[in-house]
Length: 101
Image 1 (tube, rainbow, N blue to C red):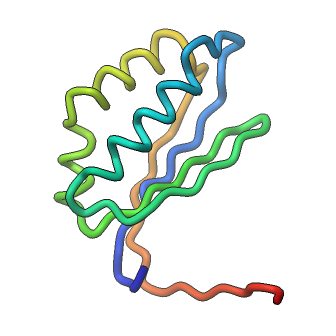
Image 2: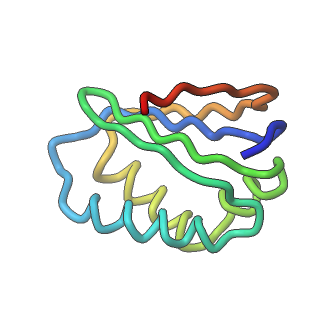
């Protein structure tokens, strides 16, 4: 990815009920990959779950947020899977990385 681009940072604390969560997460990732402006995703979960999705622009993020299947997953998250969550949207202006070879 070449900056600038946007990162949607989703942090969450899960409930004890995780029935159907993994399946829905896989469906959402697959669906997001089909959206215009989608650039990628990274995710990790321990006590706090962190998922960062990357997008070309704010319009792409808005379209994803309004996707009917994504709206359904959001409702399920609020009613079953999450004690709490926070969404942050950030403009990535610069990036660098390291890889041991």
